[in-house]
Length: 255
Image (cartoon, rainbow, N blue to C red; front, side, top):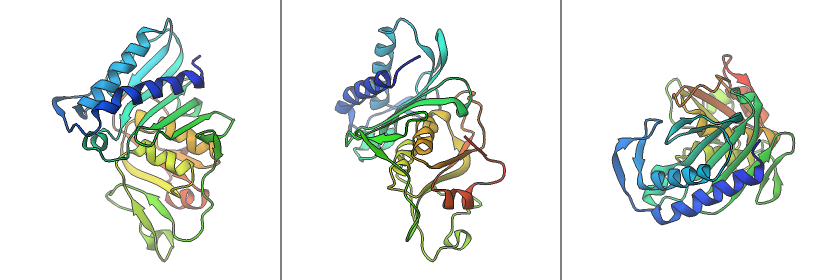
């Protein structure tokens, strides 16, 4: 099994390899395995991932947003979005990260390790199952709800996230363009709840962040537990219990 230190080392290598490509504003006319526009920064990050793999004697299955599934010999699966928020990074907008999670099986209930590294600030979020969530070595937890709730939520049809539905006089709503980093912000108390109910997320977008929130004493619901590839099929609600209970729909299950 891979260690947390190995995942942190991989994240740092990807970040360092990507720095020269921040703000270059270079897209290609082909798509990643996940179906998104490929950019120079994506290719640089994926190149570093392949270099890291070439140095490993054995590794678990790898599911990467850029390459797709790479079969390994060890137990479990490594879920990687080398640059989540690459459209931001490509323009130099400072909200993008490396997202890596290790799962012991092909179920999100078996998430074991998580690392999210902000490629602009260098902030390092990490968690091991049952051992808490940490930001730059300091234990962090989800924010206890007070005052005006701050919600990370993309615009979505049939929207439940209005102040009237949630029962607040005011809410503050954001979408910064990296769901992984949004989950890290939720785990560290910067955001009260993250909600994306569109069924449009990939597992590599959210896996690391789900474990961070859970280990930060938060609540996490998804519409599907099975890890089946790079299809855009997932919804997620994560954060403080008070808001998660208001937003999660009946078809969603906890992890």
